[in-house]
Image (tube, rainbow, N blue to C red; front, top):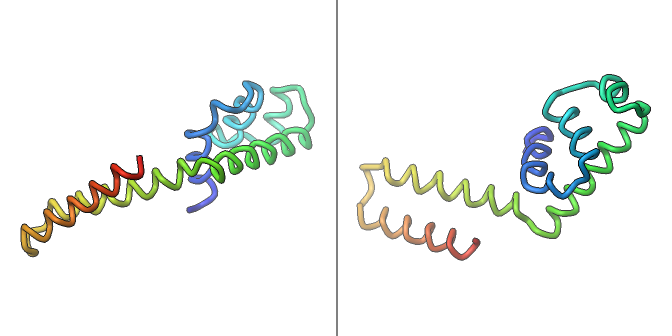
Length: 113
């Protein structure tokens, strides 16, 4: 997973657990693509302070993911749903086989959540 997508997913799942100040700085850096200087000027802190805060937020979000695995589970579920979608569109395999695979995937999804 590329870094920006990973940051976005981690923030989507765990961003509310950051302080408001951390959220503002992180959103400016990741979502608004602002430079460290722009964020520093807006927040009244140094560029180094912004850099350190972003790195700290990255670590915090990664720590939550390492404990809760919500992004990992989400990506696995998304992959299975994509496979189910693909199976529903197929016409070249046995319908019984397709239905059994769809059942397997749906049971797996239910167990995960």
